[in-house]
Image (tube, rainbow, N blue to C red; front, side):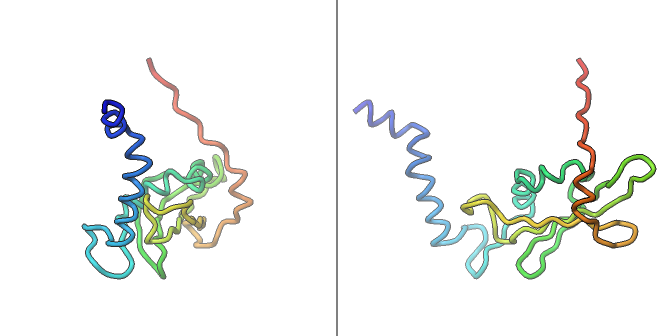
Length: 146
């Protein structure tokens, strides 16, 4: 009896049994806060969290210099706009960093999300070649003050 109570209170029960049941319920009946209808709407904050935990974000981190500036949806994609800097010193120029995510992808979606990244020169509006951005210097960490 004690082992049954211990198993029922453990996190293993939640991970192995209850979490898959919750995900199945969400897929079948939809999320209770989004209402009934076609494609479900994911909050922008959830898309930002998903982006910031992705490999695409960590790869572009040396270029990105702002928080989310703007967002919009187009053809099923959620576009997230950040500002950034390409180059160093006198050669540094501002760029717009655009991430495109599937607008219906959330944390409960299985698999890694597809994220597309584009860099656009903020002054000219011309795309910046990815090869140029590979040469971007790594962002230095701030010194810890004791």
